[in-house]
Amino acid sequence: MKNLSLKKLLVTCVLSTTLLSTALAPFPIEGHAYAASSSVEKMIATGMKYLGTPYEFGSNRSTTKTFDCSDFTKHIFNAVGVTLPPTAATQAAYIKQHAAVKTSLSSLKRGDLMFFMSYHGSEATGYAKLAKTKQEITHVGVYLGNGKMLNTYSKESGGVRVDSIDNKHWEYRFVFGGSAL
Image 1 (cartoon, rainbow, N blue to C red):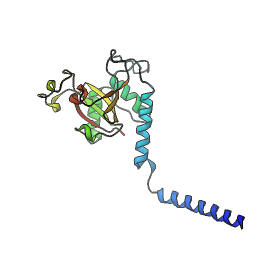
Image 2: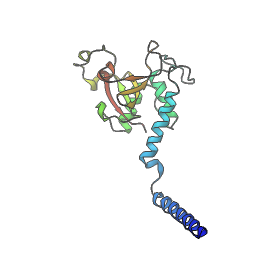
Image 3: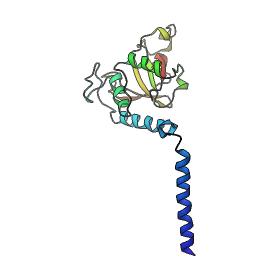
Image 4: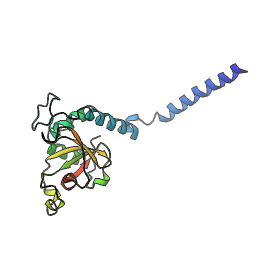
């Protein structure tokens, strides 16, 4: 009797596995949200390994000893097979050509690139009269969710770091974001 139950269990497992793999066959895994999510998490995990790496404007693209903002995003997206252009402005143009542009912080998803205009102070009033669509893109970071961003922007800031966006100059400087994955 035990052997019969074990055989039934084995047959059930084999059939279930076969049915599941057959059911998923028409849908390549890279088309699933799970694949995108795993790519996002791999890219972010790569970025987190560089926390504290010093900032250097115009950093040497062939080393990871220092980063500027666009070198950092280019490097961590490379870890998931995405080749971004070299500067914040050209990465912004790339997103405009290849993804849905998100102008609201609340519409951003984890792993989205975020693009910012130049710094005009730490108060919202410094940005109130600026037409965001006419501003030059001067900074890029990666949205982590919950009002946080992974980026690097100055020697004084400590290099690669996680910053809060809400009620900070980052919120006021935000122009748009979008997914490169």
